[in-house]
Length: 373
Image (cartoon, rainbow, N blue to C red; front, side, top):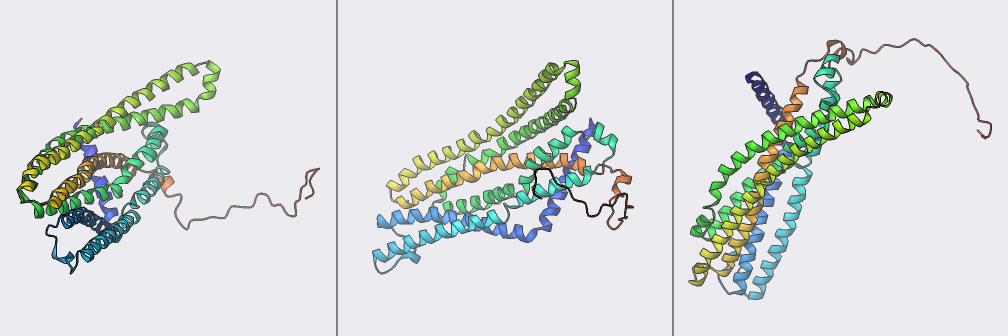
């Protein structure tokens, strides 16, 4: 048992090294993608904050000096143009990170599938029969690749979004009202405890589900390859029941892992709702006594709802992070497997030989009876 655990740990470390190597090899595109994510988060917060300034303008409350002009009409026009400009640049920056860092998800998928083929084509026959069967390889090139690819793109986008959107939002809330912000985040500090336990449970369930999927794919190839023999000995009904049973077993394991992932939603959602309720009931007295403007109060509520996105993303990011590296560690078992030296040396570049001519045909023509040519 200890040997198996050590082997899995080594594959997990290899997966992390290969992932980091890919990121460092493409650092310009990732750096640009991070910049677009940071700017997107910043402009999201500015758009939400500016709505509070609009309300304060109509309520004739103080607004930042940068928007103050000689007339109220000009001030309103400046605020309106500012919001339109913020929305426009927000759209551009979102497009930016989708075309840079997020696109690496699809690029990595192609690369991983190519790596699987590059290694499997040189495997020994005994390994293909006993260990890396058709079902295992099908599972690796489809399910594992599809799960592992997200850590190269969309999962990273979500991670940086959580970090910077959280920082910008919390900082903005502190600039509005320190005491109210501390009350709002009192409940959020309990989240890491629940998330850690939930992520460990989900990782184990997902690993078990992937193993059952490999067994299902393996049995499927056996059933298809022996279809003629089944017709001869009339065992088709038996194999149908067996295939149905293992498919249902995989379905139950997969649903168990999915239900575990869904637990992130109530954990994250309840924390943000509680924070919103705290702000509402504690913030009203500040608005009544005049220490907090109505625009700032509305901005605080908007920022809390804005913070819901990274809170929801946090759970899914942890989930995707665990599942992706679990899949990449399974792929590493293929990448480190010994190759057949005879097959590996067969396709060396430059070693081309001309085959002798066996049959040569010249000036041959043919025509069907009813054809013109």
